Length: 394
Image 1 (cartoon, helix red, strand yellow):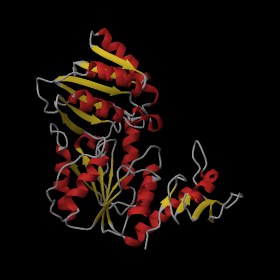
Image 2: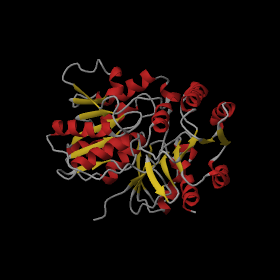
Image 3: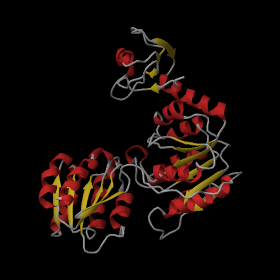
Image 4: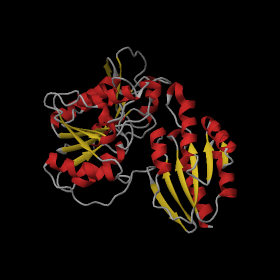
């Protein structure tokens, strides 16, 4: 029997599935009921204030379709009663979740939310569509606003929580690092959570979180190589789970630290997201690159940094000024970085959009270039990969 599929996107093919008509900042799902039906939906959850046509759908009138989506996911988790490891933090969430899953999934039935489906909508949809009552869950939990984490912890209360790192992400809504840490830390709000793993770099934010029955374990240590902290976490997690981690082939998630070597050079692509901390880690690491390769930086602007956006970009310009031989800056917010580096007599180029970068790459990328690509998701920097492949293979 085909599993029922749940969606909030009326454009998705959803044969005999369920559509949630959510109201968003830009549009309203109730306007797309006819499209949802045309794409196969059989049932739709709509607001009890909706008075329009059913378009042949079986309508379920509820107070709030968004809350109903989350409640259905909560009920599914509650009925299965699995052991849950919740993973949050400003960056490294997906990599950490995937590594934990790979290390323990061979010994016990495990589930993890696919890709980066970690939001108020993505997490419940992944549970409703993909979870098949496995006894051990590794769930990535991402937030943007105050109150988001409490919702996610209510849907899937963790037995064990992991906080990877705290950095300047979503400052436009959370304002300060302290607020980010506070909201991320609410992953332990339910009494079900007994153990909290905290990355050493974030431990200063959670010194008071050892009250009652909550046990705090610090993982990672200063000076570890990139991703070394994840393997330390796996080892310590095994002790908590009572499982021995199994060897696995390391593969970073798509668009995260993807390394590719071509005939005439190499590329590391890390462009799912970016903040000042991850930018510094990425561009200031040695990457074990060959010394005879020219170091090229392709840097996209950083998003969601709030009122200090210019300050963060300016500080990035100062921090990274000696980390490259050639740099390409993308986005309006990177123009001040370009101006600063130009005054430092650096070889640097600036474009407003990624499309404008293609002809410059064709002209400027040379044999023996090692290209580091990083920027926020909105820059769409993954589009440069085929251009770089062509330049470094011909």
